[in-house]
Amino acid sequence: MKILELLVGIAGLYMLGYCYHCELDERVDSSSIAYDIDTKPELRSSIGYNTYHYWVSNMQFFAFGQIDDPSKAVITAGFYDKDDNSKLVYGLTVDCGSGTWETNYINSTTDTLSVWKSGYLNTTCEQDDYFDIVYELQQPFRGKFLFNGQPMEHSVVGKYRGGEYTGYQRIQRLPVELTNGTHFKAEVVDGGGMFERYAYGKCVAYPDHLMSNCTEATIWGKQRSKGTGAISISIDNVKHYTGHWHVGELGAWTIGWDVTCWSKAPQFFSVVQAFVHNDENSQGKPYCCCSYMNGTLDEASCTSYADLGGACTYTCLSYIDQVVYDTVMAQEELNAASGVNDTFSNVIG
Image (cartoon, rainbow, N blue to C red; front, top):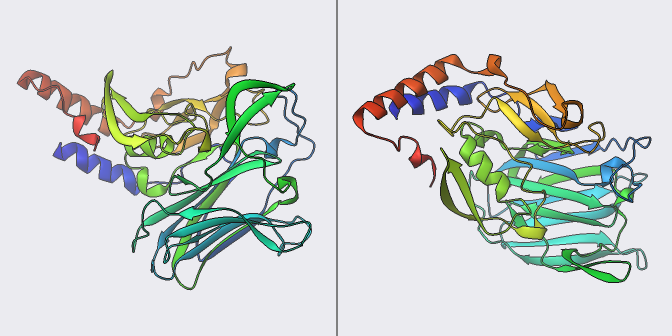
């Protein structure tokens, strides 16, 4: 395993950026970030009966950073009025010092800041810990924040259509219309920490510090997904349970939006990423893309399933890191000769 561990470290040295088909992915070294959202008003959803602009249908927003002083770290993120960048539409405040969170909006009746939901953090903020804020903008009146994978929401309601209960649940309708919030801002106040990167789009973005191990990136994504039950990872068709759980309807994306790891050595990414998030150009179908074994997606290689006949037919052979491949295969042959068959099982846990 020493050779493989060294190669994992080498793979982490040439990280470029780990978003899977995002509209925007920027690196920063700042206590605050701000940007305007590209709404593309000429593009509309073709899914079902929705006629909303594509950006208010299952869009994902990401902010990645690191805590410097947990006692001072108050982290805010939110959407602000398109005509007044100081007027909050819907936002999140996390107070690491008190271990609390709340979501807020401006009450249209009283024109005052009001609390929508509040609660306590599941885990404490620690010095030098990485943190992430994920937001799913699900519909014009529905969306939810997650902080380090914890939903900043705790209520779901029954879903009805034509007055009939569908058997499904979804998050509550927000008291504000998110289409007004096309300016996004986030801040870590009082010297409590710094942002390192932000991204948004019909996509999934992964923190840089996880991208030297595909298994860890997979667990991170599934911890924030709408799947249910315990999270497991399959290695050479053997299912390993990770001790982590999906978050169900309070999650930010479906379980299918995931990375694919190389089964021979799941620290490394498969060169074929077969189920990349659809966007307004993919005719409602996912993308098939090539990636390097360190997880960097080649955006130029991505083609919609709609254009590939309904299946991912890529092989992406030129993206294989031959040094990694030859080393892993040589180790596998050595293990087989020695009667060892669980070389890579220790990537879980």
